[in-house]
Image 1 (cartoon, helix red, strand yellow):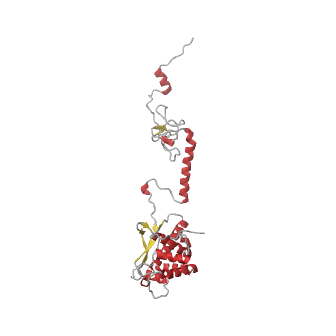
Image 2 (image 1 turned 90 degrees about the vertical axis):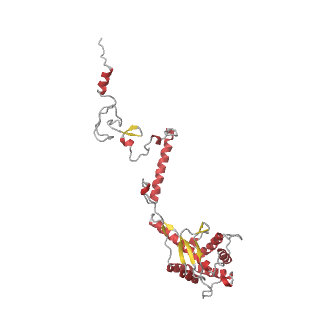
Image 3 (image 1 turned 90 degrees about the horizontal axis):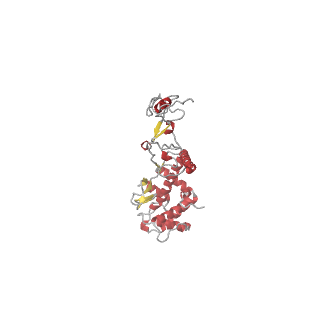
Length: 326
C-alpha cells in the first residue's frame, strides 16, 4: 500500500504562503492606502477589498477599503457608533428602517429650507460665515412726510375724524393750554409745519417707556419752540428674494408714517398736559362710540395709546390697525 507523504508544518506553511512571515507586507504601487489595479502580494498582513487585497485604510481602528473609510459624503457616518445597534445606547437592527427614515427626513427639510430662502448653508468654518446685519429703514424727509399726510387727509373719512379729534380734544383743555397758531380752528397742517420746523420728526434707536419698547413718543413742545416727534428705528434684511425685501421695506416705512401721524396729535396743547393718550382716547370714543379695546377707569398710558391709535388707523391707515376686524 502506497504511503502518503507528509510535509512538516513549516514546509506546509511555505508551500502555501511562501517563506515570508505573516507580519510582513510585500507592499504595492502607489501612495499609502491606495488600491492599485493588480498590485499587492500575499494576503498576510493585508486588509481591504476582496477584489484587490493589496491595499486599504484604517478608520477608527477598523481595516476597510479607503472609499468606505473616508467617504466624501457618507449617509452612515464614519463612526461605528453611528450605526443603529452600536454606541452607548445599545439597540438592534430592528430600528434600522426608522433610523434611515429620520436621517433622510432631516436632510430633506434642510434642503427645502435652504432652497426657500435662496441661500447657501453656513460654511464649515463659523469664522468664515458672518450673518448679515439688518440695515436701517430710511425715514421720510419733511417734504415726503407733508405729501404723505396730505394723501391721508384727502380721504374724507380720515380728514373728518382728524378735524373732529382736534376740536374734541381742545374742548377739554383750559384756555391757558390751547395753542394759538393764528388759525381758527387749529388744523393738522399747522401742527405738522411747527413740529417739522422745530425739533422735527426723528429716528431714535431702542426707544422705550420705562423699559418697555414703544414705537414713538414726543419731546418738547410747539409753544416752547422745541417740539419733536421721536420714532423708534426699524431695520430690515436685504439678503432675501427681491419681492420679500421690498415688502419688508414698504411695511416698515408705513409703520414710520403711522407713528409720525399719531405723535403729531400729542403736540396739540402748549405744555403737554391736555393732549395725553387718555385725553385723545376719550375724545376718539366720544366721536366713534367704539367700545372694543376701550380702557377702564384705571387704564394705563399704553392702553389708552393703543385705543386712540386703533380709532385713528381704522379711518386713516387700515393696514396699520392692531385689531383688524371684518
